[in-house]
Image (cartoon, rainbow, N blue to C red; front, side, top):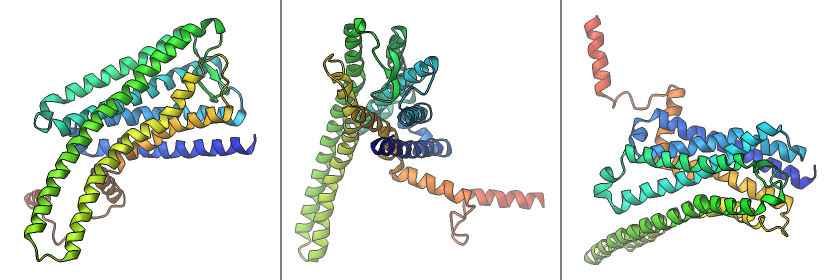
Length: 339
């Protein structure tokens, strides 16, 4: 194996480790925290993390073996099963991100009617559609024997073996990527741009109130005025930054691979081996970045993780002198009764 192959293998190992740990943390937070489980968005986050975890455990190691051995590391039946799972899980994660954006759009644009528009029942229906949609295409590809080992991507994936099937395979691939990647991208752009519009409107209202206050407080210190103005600027940039991360990470991680798969349909085009592996690693990197983009960097998840760590280390979460909860009162009462 040459130096480039070694570097690609190390990159994939890094992505695998980060994805495994981060997605396990998201699922751990969901199991540990009652507040997170009560949120409707938790259904989408659990489905996303579960699919990413399966992709990490079942697909990434076999791609790593393909890079190291530079040949098919698995038997025919196992390879087909792995390729089936990769097609299903990748499509499912895309649709889960689209469902998360729909949830955020309803919560921000229709806050008063959110509880009636997005219930647990509605979330389960969306996830049911996601699973049904994602299962359809790998089943069709398995029926037509379009799942095999591809040396270009060093993995078991959608692959055309006979040229006589090229036209049918081309139509299938275009429809598959259009109804998974493109559909999810359109939903992401529509919903998050609507969210950004509402966020900017609220920021503008807050800025007007702040400026009116600063005009009235003529004797305010210049440094305080400057801090208020800087906070206005940060508030405007914060919403744009978050939306850019949501949409940008989706396009950067999935875009190169999808475009490569579509270009590959042309009979006169040959994909470079290293570019194929890099584009594949980019799709895997989405599984590693999703927990941070959607969950672990949020304050709620940070608090849950801190509580878990404190419980493992058996630390007291509250000072003994200032802590007097109803639970402790009840425990003391029970102790007095037993005595």
